[in-house]
Length: 299
Ligand SMILES: [Zn+2]
Ligand SMILES: [Zn+2]
Image (cartoon, rainbow, N blue to C red; front, side):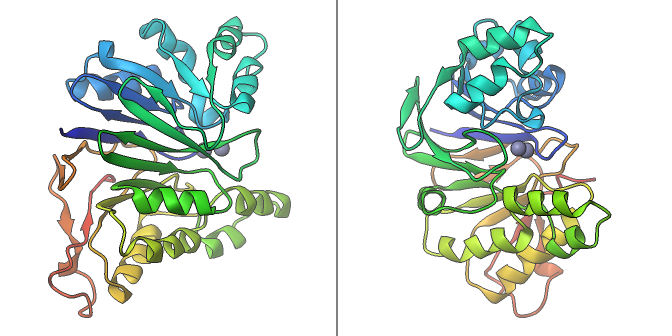
């Protein structure tokens, strides 16, 4: 079976992704407009009738703001979140009764307890973030595992285990630490960002644990607009690849442009765009058999 995975948007402007099997589609986060989410599905010939649920990682605007209109478009779509997320959705905009309905209908999960939505098995993992009960996910379909780990100040043992078992990984590379330090943001905000989001160097530290794992592709997301850039992320990952042995592909998710569709059959990752082989451009100590690919998610 081939699954499709697409990061529709990633970053403080809004987050959403989907995983689709032949006839079932799971949306992860709905922090983009209904138009952007629905258009991505339709562009990819995914029927809205195939959508079996939306997982919400936490109730920050950039992960949930599209829910009311999405729920109007895809009627009775089941929503899943932690207890804290359910509360957060319920009280999100008190003047708008649609949020109370969403909060009421949100089905809750508990961390470390796997649950199923049709053929998808979902393991919610606690993250370290500045809201109540934020979650990362390990999602399994058939024998394919995908980890989605963003909005966390720290990588936990559970995150590492999940990533090690996963073929596809979406991990945040939120900020470059020097860019954050030299930004004009107030000190309290810099501290808050450091405590609740991963720096590029912290995420690349995780890569060493993936060397012998089953990782096929890593998606680098939730880039800060002010304190990061695709170039900074690219150079961090290239540096890591040039110093270490690894065979997984990597993709940078741009803030405002949807990523390409990735197909995965359990063995090989295929994208509909031609990946750029960065080995041609990078330093000579990258061995020729090491194919590092960068998807031009950005213009
Ligand atoms: Zn976020
Ligand atoms: Zn957040």
